[in-house]
Image (cartoon, helix red, strand yellow):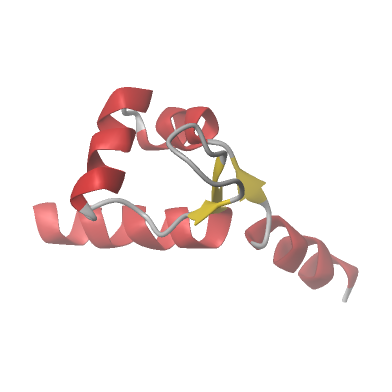
Length: 73
């Protein structure tokens, strides 16, 4: 099933903080604050230090958004 392979690849896609902020309808600084407070989606730091590049897996972001919507209801 070619559609399943494409869908799986999309879920494994890595997103930048700007992309996640747009999807979650948050500012980049709010997303950064949630990352610092450990209330945001799981992320991977690709380079060391304070200016290290951050990436989020699309699957993790979608799951986090689903959990956030359920807990708000």
